Length: 54
Ligand SMILES: [Zn+2]
Image (cartoon, rainbow, N blue to C red):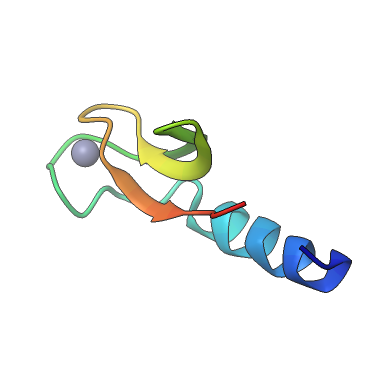
């Protein structure tokens, strides 16, 4: 992975943080992991909103 791609991935995950979850009513998006990859996941239902592939 290039440094540029890492910066883009970090921006995608960071920009989603704090947004309302699209899958449930009460959750909001937090930075976390999904299937051992960095991802933006809901803090309520745990579903990934965006996954950063490494
Ligand atoms: Zn949710």
